[in-house]
Amino acid sequence: MDPSPRPHLHYQPNSGDLDAAFRFYGRVTSDLITILDRSGHILFVNAVAERVFGFPSEACLGLLLFDFVHPEDRQASRKAYESWLAKEGSASFLMENRTVSPAGLVCHLNWTVTPYRDASGHVKCFISHGRDVTAQVLSADRVQRSESRHRAVLTGMLDPVVTIDFRGKVLEVSRSVQEVFGYPPEELIGRNVSILMTEPYSSEHDGYLERYRRTGTTLILNTTRRFDVRRKDGKVIQCELSVSRVDVPGEAEPLFVGSFRDISARARAERALAENEARMRAIFDQEFQFVGLLARDGTLLEVNKSALSNAGLAREAVVGRPFGETPWWSSVPEGRVRVQHAIEAAARGEFVRFEVERMDRTGRSRWMDFSLKPVRGEDGEVQFLLPEGRDITSVKASHARELAMQEALATIGESASILAHEIKNPLTAVNLALRAVADKLGEDQRTVLEDLASRLEKLERTMRRTLSFAKPLELERAPCDVAALVREVNDMLAPELERASVALECVCASDLPEILVDRGLLEEVLLNLVRNACEALKRGGRVRIDAAREGEAYVRILVEDDGPGIAPSLRGELFKPFVTSKQGGTGLGLAIARKIVRDHGGEIGVREGALGGACFWVRLPRGQIRSKA
Image 1 (cartoon, rainbow, N blue to C red):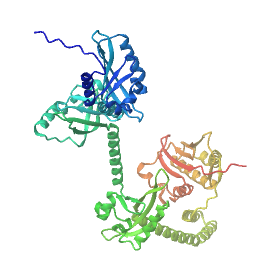
Image 2: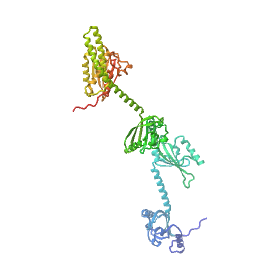
Image 3: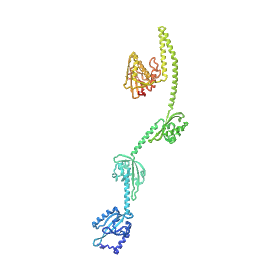
Image 4: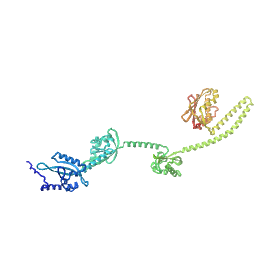
């Protein structure tokens, strides 16, 4: 059945029914209705135009519709309209633009412009229908800005952010995942997040999500945990991971947002710090003496195990307390006041040190060498104080014994000097008298008296040597050419060496420096050593003096022979007074030689020599020799 034919409508602005119906529609619709001529001039507007255009309806008539379009959209809208007119299209023209009123009200409109034709098909006018979509545009703009901000935030985040759905699929990631994890963002999106995990978590993660869907229980949400992440290159890094749940309005399932922070460098630094602290703690606790650490105000921050164990204390009993109020000072009269003054001085940057007598936990008296040192920071300000205490009880006792021995030796020396003087003169007189009597007696009686006189001479020599050993040396130091001194010793001993058929070889380095010594005493040492070597050889053999530089500060002199040598068991006793292996010896020669060398700040000893016999060595400091002006 054919539809009924539609009547042809002729637009007649003054016709009653049609005009009334059009005006009624113009009043009740919320859209903007205008009638335009071909050039776009307004022939009619409804009441909505007053709100959108900002003019009364009558004031709009005769104006171009494009006069109300926003200046930024005006040219493009008019050009599109004119292009549509040029094509004489029968279809409606669609456009979107903004209008702006004199008051500055901006509206976003979607326009539909439809040509109205008469019965013959000629266009009589154009009906334009404008729908206000400002609210939708603003809402879409807000959404777009929100998404742009969201994207900007994700792009700008230094720490990787990963969003997943309820099945573990990656929905969105920040740009920083590429720098930290090595994956471009588009390569992660759509994949299961377990790709970032190490075993066993990679295989078990889907099970965690399934259990959460069933039970609603989880241990990871709203917490920060350390987590190993596998990069694209396979390298494992350590991260801090925080996971939160996001419930999206209108969505049936939540999303999960994970924020990662690469802490590999920090973890390495923490491990290194822990190792350093462990090493420092081990060194700190292994110190045998008292070591602690104080704040500037004297509060005890740390103390080593030795200090605690020696006092029978627990760390908790003393750490955090003022140092002067700890048990270490309770047995010291005026100890608290003294240590408080020391703390105040150290806090000002002074180094404080004193000796103090205290009682240990068994009630015994102990002496402590106590010091307090300021520890400065990079800015030079005092940050901490370092207290140290060294038990010097045994040192004090040794010093006391040494002082008593020195006093005793001084007394012995004085007595020996008096005794030597008292004996020396009578011995000399008796010796001279015996020799005078011997000249008047017969041969047999003369022999007996001469032997007695020889024994008295030996006793006199012993007394002189004893007196020389007992009294302190007075060194007359002067620059000494060692090579010249060696040559002089050789010349002095030449007759004795010739009688004993001993060959003396002198070897002196070319770079031998001068040394600051008492030349006469050093000569006595060398003469004694060479004579001892000759006596050990009996008759014949070789003796060598070897002098050379030892480093920059010392000169070394060797006196060695090719004789039988000295047994190792005897070497430690040779330099003691009155110890001798020679018949008729006093046992003071080597003791005096050691005294001379030691008073010069040097050393003397004996070992096996390169020639096969004994080797006596002397090591002397060069001393500070002023250059000749």
